[in-house]
Amino acid sequence: MKATDELKKEHRAVKTAMAILDTICQRIEGEQSFETEHLDQLLEFIRVFTDTCHHGKEEDILFPALEAAGVPKEAGPIMVMLQEHETMRGYIRGFAEALDQYKDGDESAVDQIVENVRAYLQWLESHIDKEENILFSIADVHLDAEMQEALYQEFEELEEQRIGRGVHEQFHEVLHTLKDIYLENNTNNGETKLNASVIPPRERHPKIFQQFEALAPGESFILVNDHDPKPLFYQFQMEREGQFSWDYLQNGPEEWQVRIGKAEQV
Ligand SMILES: [Fe+2]
Ligand SMILES: [Fe+2]
Image (cartoon, rainbow, N blue to C red):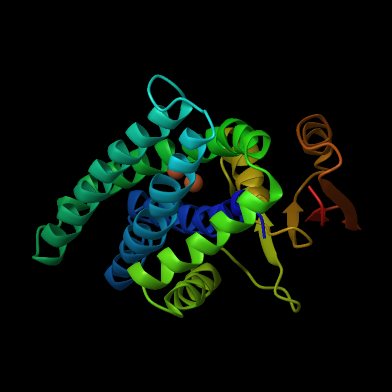
C-alpha cells in the first residue's frame, strides 16, 4: 500500500464524519433534536482518528520523509499544512468546551458548538483539498515505491502505539451507525438516498458533491429529484470527468432517480 493512498483512504472516513457533523449543525440551526452522545462520539473521532492518528502520520512520518527527500519545510506546503493542523486544533478545543458547557446545562452553548464545528469543517475541507491536489502529488514525485511502502509500515506502527490495535475499526463502526442515522435513507442494498428537492438551491450542488466525495471507489448513492438533474450531470462531466457513473433509475415524469457512482480507479 502506498502511504499517500492510505492517507487518502482515511480522508474518505474523515469526510463522512464531516458530512454527519454538517447535518447535525443543520439540525441544531433548524431547532431539531440531536443526541449529545453523538456529538461526543464525533468529537472523539476528530480528536483520535483525525487528529492523533491521521495528522500524526502526516506530521511525524510523511512530512519528515518529504523534508529528507528535499522538500523544504519552511515557507512551503508542509509549513502551511502544519499551521492548518494547529488552527483546526483550536476549533476542536472550542467545540469541546462548548459541548461541556451545553452538557452542564447551558443551552446557549449550542451556538458556540455550531460556530466552532462549522469553522473546523471549512478549514478541513480546503485542507484535504490541498493535501490531495498539491502535497500528495509532490510526495508521489519525491518518494519511490519502496519508500512509500516503508512509510505505510511506519503508519501502521504509529497507529498501534498511539491508539491501539482495532481502534481504527471501531471508529469505522461508530461512523457507520451515525451515517445511518444522519445521512441516509437506506435503500435495500445500503445505498444512500439523497433527496435534492428538499435541499435549499444554493446548497444543492455542493451537498451532492460532498456526498460524492464521501464515497469509496466503486460505491454509489441515489439522487432523487423533482426535475431532471441534467445541469448537475454537466457539472459532473466538467469537474469529475472519468471519475463518475450516471444511471437513470427513474426518468420522470414526477420524480427522477439517478444512481451516481464513483469509479473504481480514480
Ligand atoms: Fe493534514
Ligand atoms: Fe490529511
